[in-house]
Length: 433
View 1 (cartoon, one colour):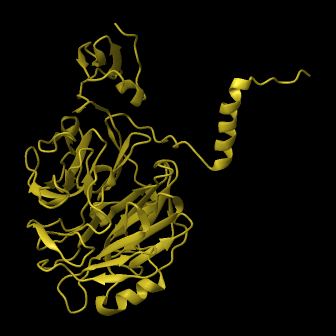
View 2 (tube, rainbow, N blue to C red; view 1 turned 120 degrees about the vertical axis):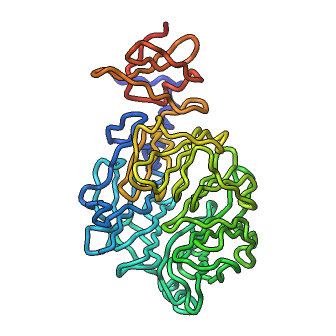
View 3 (cartoon, rainbow, N blue to C red; view 1 turned 30 degrees about the vertical axis):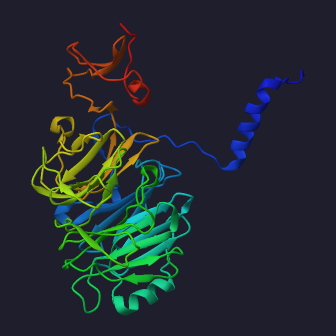
């Protein structure tokens, strides 16, 4: 048999391939569910029996940063005897199974450097309230002895509500509470710098007036040169938003409107503008949380929690029944419109929303279920919604003037940019005309 000859100029490439095969490097997995671009699809685990009328609902979710097709979803219920708990998918929501033995997982986060390392906060009801750590991808969970000691006194409760991890150090963790601390009408923040092994208590900000459920966030965005590990935002259901730049030693009220009962989320846009959920309307800050204003144009008077973006558009929804997800260009953020003209509506607001940039999928953990959206964004505009005749869908068509969408009628709508087709799959493409 003739020996296989390898060209010398191929050697660097072959060496790189060998290194990749043994280094544990893996390209982001392709999302498996059949998603129609521009259409939200319900990918809720069927075995969880999510049903608002039965008071079984979705809460927090997480995407594994190292393997974005691995998802976690918290399912909660008024009756923890229901099939509630933490569910995991390794195929972007095509299939699910319950992992661990948590009753009411409100939020879960995944270590960006170690997919097996997770934190979860459990609260409100059930027998597993508290702070939990997993080192095997959610299969088993332990509550650190240091957390038990920290919540004995002066805290007096393990009933948690939210969690934040330092963008630069996953061992630096903040948690906030659902129930008030002993002898108080509110709750403060616990801080750990060693991955939850030991904790320091920070009293509630003066002026936070109580209410069940407070949320905590790091305002640390090195990509924009904003904040640091000591800059935090505390949002309360009574008293408004409070900010610290000295790690909880002192707080200042920065917004007099409250967060929504149920939870809150902060999103930092590509322009460095912050967006937050809120009661009545969401809020916006252009100075890393020093000041906030309500966003109203195009939005309902309602409750808002989850908010996210894909680098082109922002997404948010509210608690109104049969209401759509609303969008605004990240370059704007002030004027909002119903996504795809309001073609789809939902019966409850997103609790949390996250974007998988590797696969171009926006996830929305609504109270009524987990939805996935194959994003279609072009420039600063959402792909226009175009009616099609039965049996024929709109298609993307390259042209000399840029990418166009061709409706069933033959009418074309020009999209900005020539490279949009590269990011969109599942369409038939014609030759340029």
